[in-house]
Length: 355
Ligand code: DAH
Image 1 (cartoon, protein in one colour):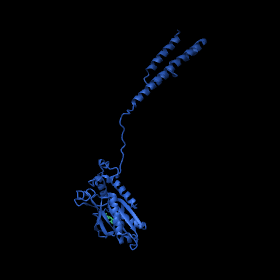
Image 2: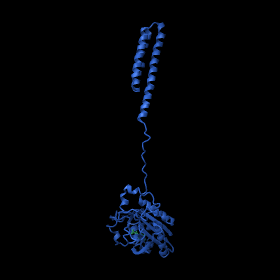
Image 3: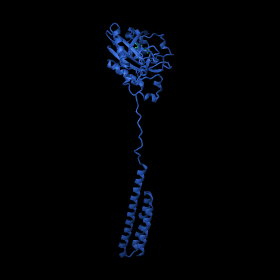
Image 4: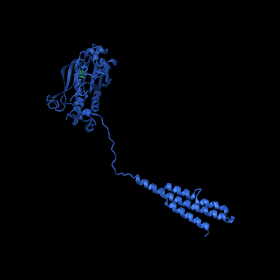
């Protein structure tokens, strides 16, 4: 073998050795340019071509080219091997354990106060009422004056009502919505107004923020008998057929006559228990025939129209329907408590206090 051939073989052998050693694609790239690049030994041999006798040149050129393609093939082979190894390593690293339990999505639920509100709304809508709304931030006129409340009434006191400015306050009752509806709508009116109310009260049975639902009916010829009957149907639909209701004489500035509305204790059905403190009855809210002064304040002629209104706390109803013993539980929002109530459906079949 002539010395050039030997030299070529020896170069190829060294190149193949180094290519085989390249541990990754990056290294392989460096090795490749060392053995096949412009400054490589093989390229250097090509430069010797000019110095050779003419007849030897083609054969030598051919051999150098063969050596180059041999080295090139070796690089491609190594490249494939390294890529394959890379791929297998990635598969291994990203291996999915399909037996691992998934992360369960936390499903939210409606708050018991919202559940109770929607339930009462459904009952009232089935009785022909529409749902009305008014602002939480009110003026004294809608919260007191138009509701026939005298200037010196204790409810107006700073110790009972949250004032924002002189004449601006957080409504203490949803009765304000009566006024807003009567100011803007002509009778017949048949609305309920659920919403938040605010009072400077905070103890075991009072919260500074609470919810009320107000109902108002105004039309020609509305009588106390209509009133009594509607309230009776309403309380039975909300609390169950066995739950009687009764009126006790009372006073509210915006109704005449006025009454307090009681229902038969839904926990003991009247026999007396600790929920009703032995009396068999539970106080639900206030009620009465709309006072003529309230009609006048809203531009409705009390000689032509009459009506009735009632209002009560929604927290109370939620507690009775869902069997929640302490009002504070409704505001603490402990999810262990909230999770137990996802629907008011079936409250009369025994999941609430009425069972
Ligand atoms: N707004 C009264 C309160 O917060 C409840 C009430 C009493 C509403 C008599 C009425 C009513 O509609 O006629 O105590």
